[in-house]
Image 1: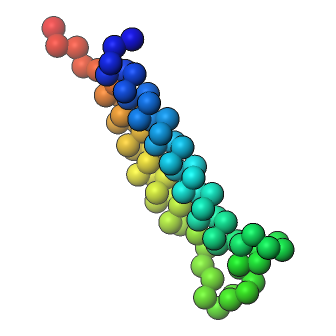
Image 2: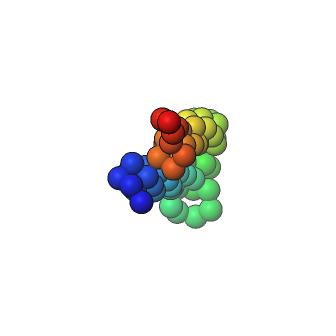
Amino acid sequence: MNLRRVLSIIVAVLLVATLGWLHYELLTEAYGSGPPHYGQTTNMDKWSSPWPGLLKVDAIGAAMLLALLRWGIFPKSHR
């Protein structure tokens, strides 16, 4: 394995871990850690679903991940 491939795999794993942590934090904040959907029912007039924002973050993260893996695993050959 060359350095480029190893670095792209490491950064890709870190990116996936960061996105997973972000999902956990945002969903815990939105739905609360108390009884079922505590954060949702406490201030129902102010509550909004976290899913549209998470889907935008996922789309950006997926594009970055694909570009990173393409750059590191399938580099263009300069022949």
